[in-house]
Length: 146
Image 1 (cartoon, rainbow, N blue to C red):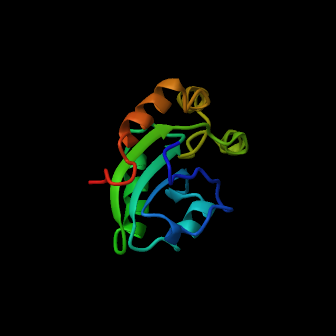
Image 2: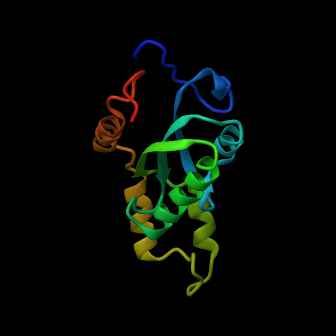
């Protein structure tokens, strides 16, 4: 890891004011960042931020676009979002079980297509996702920000 960088998990990450650039990873929950990330976002002011988002849906889906836009909107009044990366991620098994309980015809009912999506999502992030994320954030060290 480059000098001056730190990898920390939420919610125990150090205060954002200690950094010039923050790469914030989160999973999508109800169309926005998960609760721990949302709490940390409230503390970020005057920073350059890179966002790394995982969600069960396809990374190029409308849901992914709307979710990233929602998180960017929380940051941009007081920060500059300089990079964004989206990849598919595992769906909480409890959520899959909940979908199985919905009756046929319900918008979230477990269909063969949805089951296949959940099985695909369980394989991510994979090595290719991590390689693409590294390429997205390459060169983001001190003095190299856009």
